[in-house]
Length: 308
Image (tube, rainbow, N blue to C red; front, side, top):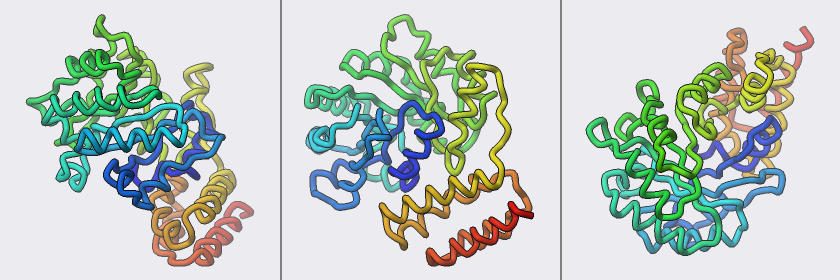
């Protein structure tokens, strides 16, 4: 969720019911070299708690040092990313690439657990490919090293985000009698009905929502309503969507500046205007806007749509 789960968006997700938020993943090498981009990702507001800072890397020593640096920012927990399938991360031997070297993954995890006083959690996938999915035994090993919880994405690294997420192995991990730590599932949870189905099928302790929340922070509120009361809430009106979008956009400008916000915010428009076909021309204009004034002008036109 690079350039997505930043502080402005995390704050909005918390407002709409997210119980825990996780930072963008942060390069351990960037942290130990004082890289500005990596260091900036460590910042968060009080309203974002509880929060996990998520780090990734390929070296035991750099992950240990990065964990120490992250701990100084006083998050509620530290998350180790062994699940990112992006090629530039894989080429460095980090993220999901470590699923090809389980001994190194375990050494890295054990070293970080011993280094910090914070709870350490792990985010990973079922395995490297369809012939190598050791997640059931790996989860036991991670638990034995002192990991406080594990989150599992129901795809292999090779699958990236293609095909449908398979939650069967997530269920096996959760229902393994040896498992004592919380097990969280992830993958293709895009609405309350799917969330309830996954809870009932697997018995997981919680669900992580990533892509389903992009431009759709209401998903957390909607799922909680359905799980607790069986109520399907009405979709937000265009006016509500614009109010939240503006709040998100304005906060991003304050944190990241105009140029970076204009570029990164393009990932959110489809979510904010989902299922409103008549807004497609506006969405196209927004993703090609190059200045703050351009965006605000288009949003003002959309305001007129709410009045009409």
